[in-house]
Image 1: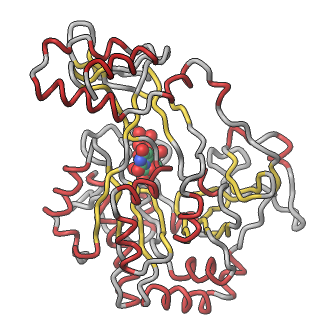
Image 2: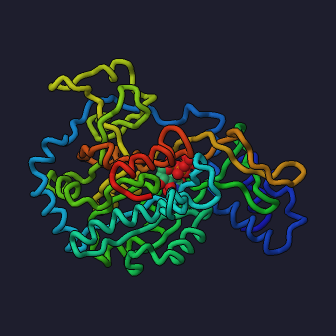
Image 3: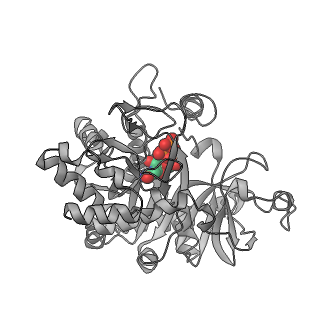
Length: 408
Ligand code: UTP
C-alpha cells in the first residue's frame, strides 16, 4: 500500500492521526506502518459509536445436558469409542493461548505463569501433564495445535523449547498465530503504540479455525487424518483434554459439537449457559438470563438453564469447514490499552481506556446443527486462572489442584 492509499483509507475512517509522525520515520518503519494500515480491518471501529449494530439474541429455550448418572452408566462404552478414535489418529487438540491475560497482569504469556509453591509448576506444564494422561492410557500422541498471537508468539515457542515441551513429543506440536484487531478509544480513534505502530490486540478466540486454515495448519490436520478437534482454554489447569469418555459420548450421539459443562453453583453465577436459540444450540451469557429463565425448571424439577460452559469443546472438522465462511458476531470489549501519549511516552493505563474487538468461540456453537452439553464435576475439571487473587484466581486454582492430589 502506498502512502497515498493509506491516507485515503484512514480518511475514510477518520483515522488520519495514524500517519502523524510518518515524515520522521525511517524507510523500514514507514513500510511497517503502511503494511499495518493495509492489513487492519477498520470497519469494526464504527461499533464504538453505534453499538446497536451488535447482534440481538433469538428465542431462547432449554437444551438438556448429558448428566453425570447417564455418563457413569455408559462410561466404559464411551471410553472405548473415544480411545479407538485417538488410536486411529482422528483426534487433535487446540490450545487457545493467544489471549493477553490482562487480568492476571503478567507480561509473559499466561501459560508461562508459575503456580508452584515448593517447586516450579507452570500453567502450560499442567496442561501437558493432563494431555499426557490420555497419551499414556492410549499409547498414542495427540496432535496439539497451539494458537498464539503477535503479542506472545516468540515467548511461547521459546518457552516450550526451553522446557523441552514438558516431555511431549515435539513432532506432534504445531504453533500458529491468530490475527490482530485495532484497539481504539471510546470515540473509535485507534490508539498508537509507537510512532509507527497502531495499538492492536488479538481478535478474540473465535477466529481459531479460520486462522488455522490461513496458516496452512488445516492442511496438516487433513494430512494427519484428524477428524475431531478438542478446543480448550489456556487457563483451566484441571481440565481433561481429549477425554475419551467425552469424545465417545459426542460421537455416539452423532453430534457435530460437544461442550463440557458444569452444574451452576448459583442461579446467577457468571457463566455462559448452554441453551437453544431459535432451535439451534447456543450459549446465553449470564447477563442475558432473564429472571424468568433463571427460575425456569425442567421436567425433573431442576433449573432448566443449569449448565455453564468451561471453554472446552469438541468440534467435528467437517462441520467446522462447512461454517467457515459464515459471519460471526463481533463483540466489543472494554480494556486497558497501552498507548503513546502526546509527548510520545508509552502509557500503561490503570483503568480501561477503550475498546477492543473480538469474535468468540462460543458463537461458533450457534452455527452448528447439534451440540451435546456433557456434564463434568466442577471440583475435578474446572480450575480457571483469570485473576491473581479472589474468584477464579491463582489462589483458588491452587486449592483445587491440591484437592486433586497435584503437588505444588
Ligand atoms: P479470556 O477471555 O479469559 O481472555 O480468554 P484472556 O486474554 O486470556 O484474559 P484477559 O481477559 O485479558 O484477562 C479465554 C481463552 O481464550 C484465549 C485465551 O488465551 C484463553 O485461553 N484467547 C482469548 C485467545 O486465544 N485469543 C484471544 O484473542 C482471546
